Amino acid sequence: MAKKKAARGDFNMSEEIRNLLKNDASMSSREVFEALVRDFPGQEINRNSCNVAFSHARRKLGIKGSGNRAVRHRRPSVAVSSSVGSLNLGILQAARELLSQAGSPEAAVQAIQDLQALQLN
Image (cartoon, rainbow, N blue to C red; front, top):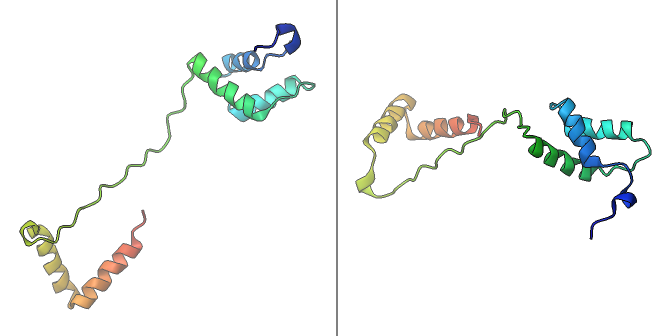
């Protein structure tokens, strides 16, 4: 059941957050919380409730995020088939070139392992 308005007092955190964001839409959640604590020193303000009200107020006012988040795409995994019918001629030619450059199969395998160790995901 909702509390009566008289029991809540004069402090409406959501309304105060909306007022702060109307004045400066670039404020962060921490800045809004610090402003509320500064402006209402006798009021006990829950940090988590303030964050939720901040998020809802931004949505209600139509304030979008900065949009500069990095989007990380997964590389598609390459299916390796062991059947003879699906051999890729280009890969075989590249392997032959690697063997000729490396001099021996052991050196070629070592070069591949070194290359794999250098690659960062």
